[in-house]
Image (spheres, rainbow, N blue to C red):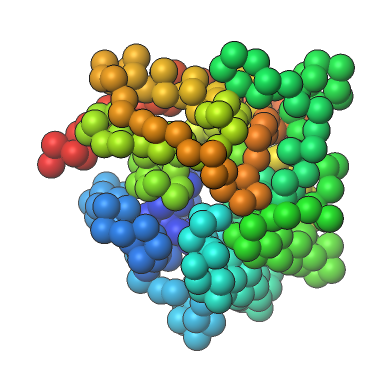
Length: 355
């Protein structure tokens, strides 16, 4: 039997992974205890998505386990052993602001939880491919010291800079920078996954995501910017822009395109490899540009305000360079542009809000 084990399986990337791999593995094991509801409130519960997966995929088996608890994880890993061929670790506390409220919770989920998953894999299925969803926040605020230029709707990097053409590559330092506590806990996890690849020779891949998005995102004010923005556009709820004149730029990758990166890596894995994973120059926008696009798709005028208080460690401009991954896996490419992704989010969000 061939098994894929996915943490955070009811979240955005976890649920997309379940859907993507359901016909490629005999059994999909999902681990998710809906901590997202604890982080961001009832409106961000992933229970609806867990139920959808259980109803849709007959080979999906869900475990309400906590990645911070090695005993709970050991029982699952020992049950399936070397039949586990792939581990996709997406479970995390994902918010800058929330991490500062409960540093112990943030670190134990992001760092200790990742260590638990790595060690369970090493002890029970060491030949499995281990895929980790890291974040561009491991670079801290180093991107803010690039030569940026203010335009009418966005900040942009000077066209003479090497990053102008394709974006920020994996060589940008993760040191000597302000990360936020969330960024620091993800750095710890990121380096651990690299080390299990380099030290133990495990097939580990680290994907440093930009803004990850898609129709199955339970967006909240503190996390899931495009999903929450579209929710506000549909419901006429107020939205607050934090700093940088609303011109801060994010690249956005659809959850399907990211999981397709996992699939390509799984078929030809490497040990301890790091990849930036975002929308790159193909799909990026400023906050102001995203609001205009949400208004166009929803047909509603958005209610929003601005505060000069930017989030600590937040990026002014971030566009991922995926050249390294595309060189290693030349058959991969993006399939969802920004308009298509936001249209999907609008359709999915509207349907959920009607229920």
